[in-house]
Length: 377
Image 1 (tube, rainbow, N blue to C red):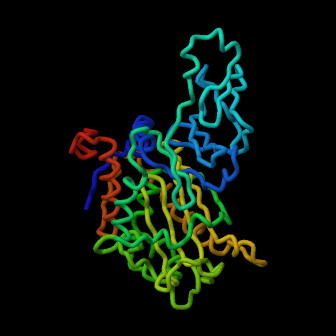
Image 2 (image 1 turned 30 degrees about the vertical axis):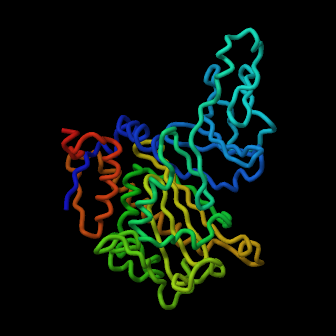
């Protein structure tokens, strides 16, 4: 089945700006681990669409998401990636100071300035926590996170609350790898929507998850997503390059999942993998039409991490080698998007791509039923 998306969807700066405005600046985005700002005053800078945000832990332990822009002359308030504020955020340009709620507290000669100056508080974004991650949304009127991801969880897992079994809030990052991929974010996301390429490209992961040799993974199947996940190979004890478990099974994982891999895509920027002894999180950040930053994190139980001899490398290596194979293929697709002959054909194995494209299209053009090809004509 052919689904027409014009090549400009992968190459145009103008189109990426539209995606930022209507998708990444209107959706809940997974941006950081809550543990990165565990102490009051601690902060981390993150990106949400085209905006630079400061996530800061207040004295009452709540998290505030502040736009990194002084309300005086627009200077960036903070240039450090991570750190700790004492009691306020002070702009180094003219000395305007804001408390950790983002309220203006002082400025040079404030008594000489118009009264309304005192109301020039920092712009803020919504922020919430789920699975130990911080999620932000720049849209002040956006509904709660679960309104966005709930249908995806329901579609993939039915009524089962699979993510809660893995105790993600308690897990710690044991390994993090960042990739700079020369491909559009949608090409990458579509790659993870299907496993039709797995038998051809991924011998390592198919060795561990034999069912993937059928061309169907856990996120797609002949009848759509499959609740039961994918079983490890008979001779494998864990999801790793060697096939060995890297740590004991996580405390909350039930016996029926002790040898099962579950995967889910949470549009627009997350791919989660639930594995008996750890969890993998992959996040996507569009940088340019032809460039995407991808961050992968291997999450393990703190007791496992502190066990003598523990290493996450074997487990992380399986995702790393698979991801690099994927990224090379995605870059090959990106290289041809400027061709006048560029077109696509989708097999039944790739049906989830159609769902993803419909989701993207509904957010870019909510008031039209035109196909992307008709809009570009």
